[in-house]
Each structure stands twice: as C-alpha cells, then as structure tokens.
Length: 181
Image (cartoon, rainbow, N blue to C red; front, side, top):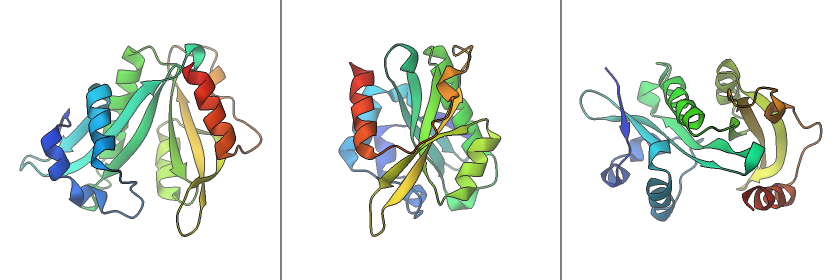
C-alpha cells in the first residue's frame, strides 16, 4: 500500500531515483528547502511499504485576490511506479490543500512535447489556458502550456477562460509581479 506523507529534509538525500527522468525538472538544494520552509503542506511524498520513494509533488499557493491559486511546481513518479495512479493521487492531494486555502484555481506548466503528461492533466480536468513561448531553456528552447483547473471558489470559472494568443516570458514575469503586489 502506498503512503502519502510530508516530504522531509532527509528525503532530499533519497529521492534521486525519482529525479533521473529526462522530463523531470531538477533544482538546487536551496530551492527544495525554500519550498519545505514556506509551503510544507504542498510538498508531499508517495512511499512504498518498503520505504522506497515512489514519487512526490511540490507546490505552493500564491497570487492576489481572484488570482489566488495553488501552483504545481514539480510532480514526478519514479519509472518503476508509473501507471498506478500515483500522479493523480498526488494531484488530488494538492488540489484538496488548494481548496482548503480558498484558491480560485490550480495551475502548472508542462512541456508542449510531453503529451503523456498533457493527456493525464486533461483527464484530471485541466485545460490548456495559454502557451508560454520558450519557457524551458536548454539545447533547444521549448514552449510550455500553462494548464489550469478551476476550484470551487471560482463559481463562474473565470480563471479557466483560455488566452487566444501565446505569451512571452517577459509578459509572464510582468503579470506575476503584478499578481504578487
């Protein structure tokens, strides 16, 4: 049986088997510890009965007024434990926390090329809200989809009315600064 439990600092030294996937974004230790300190309730781990880390979700709550929302920063499941519904379980956990925090929606960014993840999110009720140009940098920059799911507080579903035009990283940063003020 799978156990969901809060991520701890000790887990930072045990979760490499989950992070080796090429589609998993990895961060520096200080990034993970910042999330653990600021949004511990949004950082959960799925663990097997033998204590093996099966996957984790890391997120936060942010925004202002009707842009107050939960955000999925990272969701990953170890290749050995895929297709068992763990990602859906972790997403449901984060959505429940966001409901309790009275968020209007939950959002996440996903590579446009990651069709498996996009389909999973769509099956969980997420829509493609907008395209962010060159969001992922690397050998070849890649666009991202900003996917959203309205929470019960957004009665009129205003948070999930899709943009018709892509946005640049510059526009996204400007909007994020505005949302935090």
